[in-house]
Length: 203
Image 1 (cartoon, helix red, strand yellow):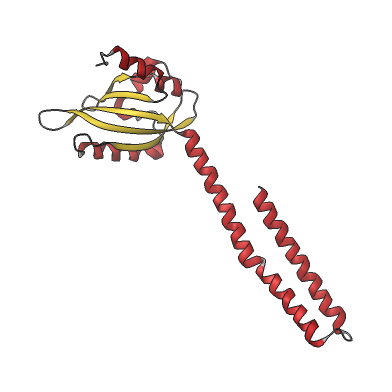
Image 2 (image 1 turned 180 degrees about the vertical axis):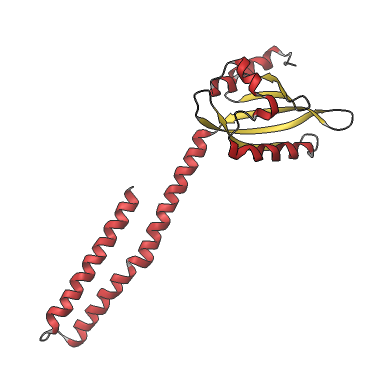
């Protein structure tokens, strides 16, 4: 059941997101605006064939439960209620992309069971990958914060303590070499930690 409105069909064709109409009762795709075909790399016939059972053949196995949960939400949804889902879909070249979808029931059978849903799908792979990169950066910043508050603090406290001893007792006799050896070792340790922090921040 394709839209009859010529303008609406034109909008579908130029949009960067996929619009679909799906017969949930018969488990088949009724209409696709064509964007998914371009994104996933299948022919139109292949894509329609893969639409059976909510695209199970191309849904990442780890995301299939999300699909089942979404179907359950749709079954219990109210008129006009939008149900969202983000899953991985298999491209024709064997790679997965992240797809974000919003679906809504538009037609039910006499007994209330879902017959038709409409769905809007968008490739959000770039956004998901960017989020992963940001999480990695946050993790590095947390590591730097830990190093600043713990690893650096310890040798700095040692240096302060050694300086206090020198100021209190002065440099006399055999203690001279020993105290400055400890001070040298502590400074080297601090220098190593600072380099580690810089390496973490720059990677």
